[in-house]
Structure formats: structure tokens, C-alpha cells
Length: 500
Image 1 (spheres, rainbow, N blue to C red):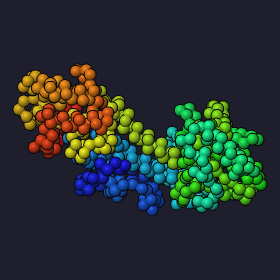
Image 2 (image 1 turned 180 degrees about the vertical axis):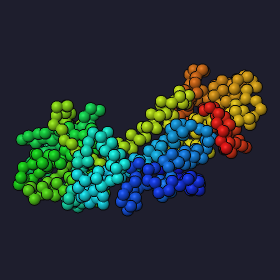
Image 3 (image 1 turned 30 degrees about the vertical axis):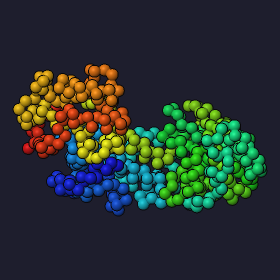
Image 4 (image 1 turned 30 degrees about the horizontal axis):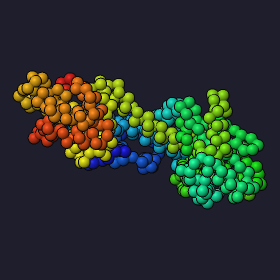
């Protein structure tokens, strides 16, 4: 998984995986993974857990059980902690969803590597080369993305990966220091052009992305263009595609060409191109290589954006003039599709949490990966995870499992759970006043989720809170440990269950 939380306990669950019944030779358990080409399984980049599940043909639901069981141990929370809280704390997507996503990503990567793909050699035979279940999953994905496989930017037939494809100037001139005042950048840019590029035909390009449109633009002293592109494309892709389109529409044969761009990452990626560079960069390199036979020289010059350079400002203005009526180009980068699918998968975890009743009880807390950067060790990580999930060991919690004779606070005669101890118990009034002052909490009557929002606002507040917990007599290392939750008969979150 992307998180190390699952990796640290994965070996403990290899035997756990083997306890699940083997489904035999059936292939119906993994949607979009059941390739009819055996060698393709070896090409899918998956972690050890997913690979083990594929080899044993375990059910997708079993994968989810393995994941959540591993995370419960890693986070140190009880077995009855709801999955929606668990995944929110871990900042992870559900494992069955990740398996399906990785398979779809594998197919999309194969489409983008045409004609060098081991699976797809021609776009019109993509779906026919897959089993029906995989083909249908891929069709649904493209339908949701509002595109077709032909729109994906693929490798050129003759890829060009030479870093010296053309002259690229990133930090070679004085005006390329963005910390300079705009007036100096503008005047020094004009002087640089007159001195080093007096006979070059100048073209300026730009890419633009808003919540409505993604566009590319370019102009020269003779003509200009502005196109809409697929909204999933990132700004990086748009900047590169703008240069590609400028080479097609704006260049004049047998002249020296100077292309201006304010995208440092795009030009830097082109200057350091290698075989695994983004497909759009490799397309641009090939296009420049071919164009060099028609032009004397082609050079790319980085210009600081929004720094008063008239060429860049005009290109930016043209790109922002895009509308629903602007010409549309279907290009879409596979890397941007993969990034979108991953983001979408993690959004499902967030949406499930926000739709649940636990959002009101706990609030919108950061995941444990963020919190672990603030804490000192894994003991504190586990403590905070239990505080957030309200599963810290208290008399009120233990009484639910008949592990404590009295659930009521002796001072206040209320349920002695973590909320009561931290927010209302009179025994700790003086400690609470001091803590509230350090956390900048004004109101004396607050809810549990409001307290957590103050605690988790930054590292300093979190450390103050952790150091103060000992004065609340919260037993951080209860002698029962996690084992007391192994055979649960009740849960503060769910209806009573009986695990045998």
C-alpha cells in the first residue's frame, strides 16, 4: 500500500490469508484482473499483499478483512472499531477498490505504450484482446472519463529520448531570476532577445486550467491559436501540448525558432528526458526532432510567469479567453488519468466518512500519517488513534465488556468515558483550565470534535495535549491491552456482536 502502516504487519497475516477457503479454479472473484494472458500478471505493479491474494485466488471481501485487521493492529485500536473510522485514520482506500484500480491502471498504461505494448498493438482491438469482464470494466472507466482509448497520448512510433534534442535555456540569463522586480525582468528580457536571439522567429505558449476549462494557447507576430483540451489534463500537460501545437501551427520553415514558455517543470523534464518520461514529453521531443529537419535551429527559453514580459502576458491572456465555444482537442495524458483515478478512489474513503454518523462525533481529523510526523513514537501514534476513535481504555468503556465493576464517575455520577474525563469531570477542572488556555480554547462547554479540532491543528498543540493526558489519569497502557477486545460482546459504536 502507499502507507507503511500496512507493510509493518503484513507478514503476520500470511497465515491469516491461508485460513480462507480456496475457490478452486473459478475466475469470478477479481473484476478487471482476470487477464487471459498469463504473463501479464507479472507486469502489474502490486504490493506483496495483493500479489498473495492473486496467487491464492481469495475473495475481494477477504482482502478487505485482511487490510482492516492489519490496520487495527498497526493503529492499536480494538477489533470493533468501524471500518469507516479505520480507513479515515489510516488515510487509505479500501483494498478491494485498490485492486480494481491497479488493474485498470495497468490496462491504461498498456494503451499509452502502444505500439510497444505486450497486450495492445492496435487501438481498434483493445477490448477484443481482453476477457469480457475486463473489457467491460475498461469501457465503464472510459465512459466515466468522457473519452475513448484513441484520445490517450501514446508513445510515438519512433520515440526520441536524447536529452540534447534542442537548446533549452532554464537559468542561463539574468532575467530568469524570478526574485527580481518585474521591471528589471522585462527590460533585461528585451535586451537578451536583441543580443542572443536577434534573428529568431519568436513564439510564446501557455497552458491554463480553471474549474471549468483546461486550455492551450500560442501566438507569434503572424497568427495565434487557443484550444480547449480534456479537463482532466494537468497544467504540466497543457503547457507541453501548447508547445506541440505551436510547432504544428505557428512555425515558419527554414528559420530559427525561439519558443517561450513559463513552465519550468515542462522544459526541465524535456531537458532531462529519458525512456520513462511522461508520454507527452516524449511526443514533444520526437516532434522537435522531426522539425529540426525543416528549421535551422529550435530553442526553448523559460520566461518567469507574470513578471511583466509582454510575450508571456499575451499568451496567458489568450489562454484565459477559452470558452465552451472554443475549438476542442481530444488529447489526454495517461499520467493524468491515473492520478485522477487514485484521487477518486481516496475520495470515496472521505465521502463514506462524511456521510457516516461518526463525522458528527469525531469531526474532520487528519490521518495518522500526518499525525505521526508530529508525534515522537508509535506509542503516541496509537494513543492518539484511540483518542480520535474514542476507544481509549476508560472505566466507562471497560464496563461495556464486563471488565470493570462500575461505569459511573464517582465524583460526577456520569458515564466515565473519554468524553466525560476530558470535557466535564470536576475532578480534573484545574487541569482542564490550564489545557484550555494552552490550546486557545475560549468556551468552557465544547464538544468532543471541537476539542479534537484544536488539538490536531498543529504539532505544538498535539504535543501539549499528549503531555497533559497523564494528569487526567488516563491509563495509556492498560494491563488488558488489545487482547481484552479479542472476543467482544458489545460495542459503543454498533449493536452487540458475538465473535467466537
